[in-house]
Image (cartoon, rainbow, N blue to C red):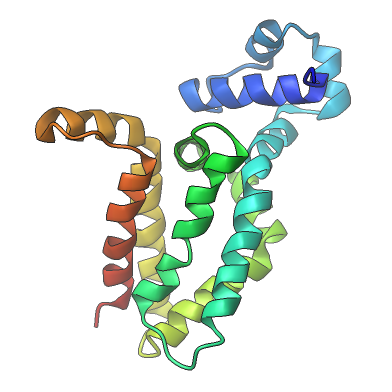
Length: 206
């Protein structure tokens, strides 16, 4: 089945955003590579900000509900540790490879781009549209470590986000460096496997 014009625009925009970032990718570049005119982009998306959100939301609409389901299941238990909270992210991240080819690494890279490019509207979109999932994650973190004050939680989640953004935005370069230094094939799954216990230990620290 031939892709629709809307899907073609999304596919091209995603590839260009991942390669060049959101700020350095123009609508002209997208329309040129997609073989469509600007009117098509305006018809389907209205503006570049909406297109950026649509590209990310192809992943988020699968990832966020899966995270929420994992956290709901986790909270059926009376007691769990921080590692369990962050383990709730592993399955949903891996499953993104079923959404798009190399979906996990592409999603990580796009999210990283969203923050390093200071796409404030994208952060607003995620925090408002998926507020329930994000709140459940925060509640689960507090349940795993009830000694955390709101101030400490703020900083630790900020540091967690910073670690994720740097890792996501640099994932391709990090994999290439690691493969060269350790002569071992790397992929997005390997990065997630390294990242999750590190983040859990940092947020759970006394």
